[in-house]
Amino acid sequence: MKRLAGFTLLEVLAALVLLALLLVGVYSGVRTATHSVRSGTEAIERIDQIRAAEEFLRRELAQSLLQPISHNNRGEAIYFDGSAREMHYVAPLPGYLGKLGPQLQQLRLVDDGNGGLRLELSLAILPPDGQPARPLGDPQVLLDHIKSGSFSYRGIDTDGNAVPWSGTWSDGRLLPQLVRIELQPVGNQGWPRLDVPLRTNPLNNNAQNGLPRAGLGNGGRP
Image 1 (cartoon, rainbow, N blue to C red):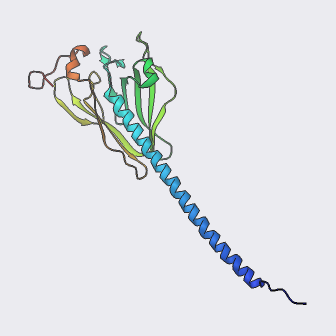
Image 2: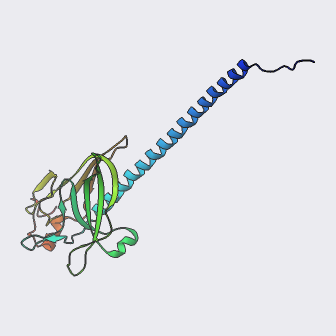
């Protein structure tokens, strides 16, 4: 009887080894491609988050209103309160939230518990009868995974003198002319230095504030 030709055990083992090496190469390629796609998606989402936070802050701060958020011990209205990590102001919200009227907005840089910071926004409704503001929901995170950050302010005082950049806005009876938000996010995506001019000119609203009109050495014009 004629013996059938076939593969030896050594040949079968060699073929299996080659097949295993081929599968390892294919798996590594697929894994690398998947990781690249995931990293690219995360980077795009991070860029979108930074851009959305920047656009929101620019729009809301630019629309700050001369609406009191509190009063000092002399009964004078306070329109703005700002420190290096927190600020309070009144501005209208876009969309359907704007139907609730201007709202007290609080921006804060808070510790995230992991050695970093996150930027939070809290909203509160200002009752028309002068009652304390009523919180509107929980704080919303505008941007997380921040290494460091700070707020600073620039404007003029009641005498018309320029107030240089400072981490605090000392006279809340006036609005600052510029608000700067500096953040350093974690990762490669940067945060452009954000300088927002407030549309309301404090000099032109001193009468409304109950303050003497200040001059700048040019006939009182800003």
